[in-house]
Length: 440
Ligand code: S3P
Image 1: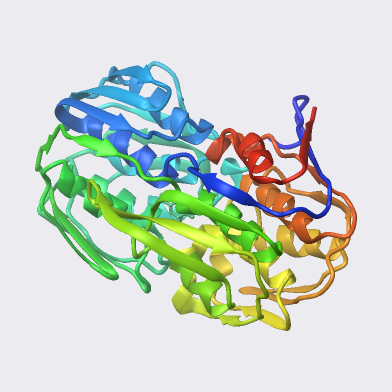
Image 2 (image 1 turned 180 degrees about the vertical axis):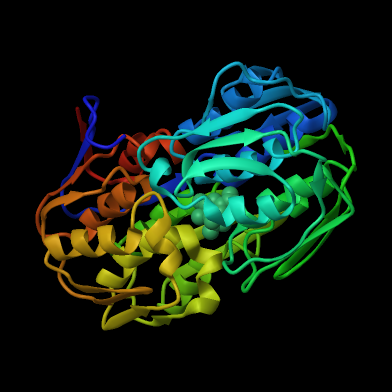
């Protein structure tokens, strides 16, 4: 909820630099999936490096409400007692997905295949986000989902006659849509296929395979045959590249910075931020490349230096979709103009990220213009001032990093939701050198 009684404001003193070695928390996308798939698996799975953010706790609670026993063996270590594909129990209350689009859309797919009814709810932001993109294909599979104007709450009833396999050509490159349809496909008769215009993140395909499910997958295509069971396994969650991104850009824009981010997830469908920052001239060294379970990881060393503005087109959008707020900050600190196109999906994230970011940049005196599918940002001096994050975690953390190059303090409103994806951000950023105070 935005503007609630428990409001958090960030005040960041201008200047400084980032140094040291930082291990950011676990990947959000992978953490959600680890609990979902371990719950549906046969046997006991353990998850290490789980993201203890509010979004992932929503997913965890939802499965507990459906009878799954989940033990917390340590801060980020879970033991999940899987109940099998058909072992979930009817929840006695609505399942609250909080701020999380991933949780709501993936859960929608797997709940559509259950023999019981369920209701998915979310916070003010999630209740505004488009759900027709999943209700549409699920309805084609025979799912029964009621929603007013395609928004949460979503009321899911058992599909009369069960789910049918679907060949779905998604109009958007969205891992949430793809994963939703694939999860419903596990409950359908036959082969369910999804194609998409650009390759979205493939964590679902990789992790289902780790749980013993045969999944076909390549860029822009994924398919699964229904009725396959999941077998318990161990999942090690890499550090979230989307959280590392704030430190990558913070260090890149602040002269004298030298930061090493360890065990960062480097899945090829997620590394757009590294590609883009390198194209802007950032100094990023990738080392210690290895596999952590089924996901590639590496250590990233980034040093401060001059950046230049570039054109970022549709081909780079999906692989950096959550990193545009912080990329807008990089653009504001670069020499020349950065033009982002093909990124209209940013308008339906936790906030309208094109508008929230452009409004914030303009409030700080940066020359930035919103376009329907992106923005034009001219690098130059960043002033101080007050910006409203509109309860968007990534917007809040982005403007916090902008202070490294600002000429006066930056105050950021509505920062409570940073806890959805990056618990401990303020402490970690302060340790690295950001002069951040949390108020409220
Ligand atoms: C996610 C997919 C992305 C991303 C989101 C997490 C996922 O959304 O923005 O934060 O875990 O599948 P879309 O797939 O809708 O672009």
